[in-house]
Amino acid sequence: MNWTDNHCHLHDERIPGGTAAAVAAARAAGVTTMITVGCDFQTSAAAIAVAEAFDGVWATVGLHPHDAVNGVDTITMLFDHPKVVAVGECGLDYFYDHSPRGTQREAFVHQIRLAHQLELPLVIHTRDAWADTFEVLTTEGLPKQTIFHCFTGGPAEAQTCLDLGGFLSFSGIVTFKTAVDLQAAARLCPLERMLIETDSPYLAPVPHRGKPNQPGFVGFIGAHIAELRSDTPQSIAEATTAAACLAFPRLAP
Image (cartoon, rainbow, N blue to C red):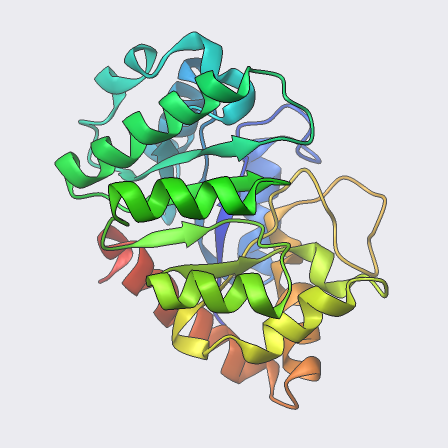
């Protein structure tokens, strides 16, 4: 099976064994494509460096809502690289409020407009901010490919994302016993709009919950979704890899 981890942080120093070991372990587990995601200038530049060093690894450039106070102008010079496949992660995080909400919103709007201008997909982080996220997206218009990373909503939020034209990306949270609403969303989502991710080194799936996460674990997420949908892991691997090529056109062969 060929899996795609559409959202990880391979450049993060907490990745088990380091970047090279994590890439090797992922390939041994059948993960052929990985997107390592930037959250500010430093991590976006590091993501690009990792993408340059490994075949099958791509990068994004973004300003996370936690870092919105830094200003989007700090990252715009990085978008020219050919292995950059998306703008983000960006969005709104009202759980931590590490940046003021007005500043988060300004940075989010700026990056939506960049995605339109550069004709790149948009990777969204939203936490405790669904209403404002949907309002901003409706006002600005979704880029052609918009990915709701680490989707944590229920069926209602899932349907709104899908109605807007977005892709839903499911992380290891979907394997947690308490994630009943999220599991319902995973059953509802059409396979052509479904992505899977590790968000490593965070959110390791069952049976590795509580340990540092890595891209090689993405198959556990896909297998659990297959069980939820009475499907096969092979089918989920094929469908989510095909959907990743739709969501991130630069991945397509």
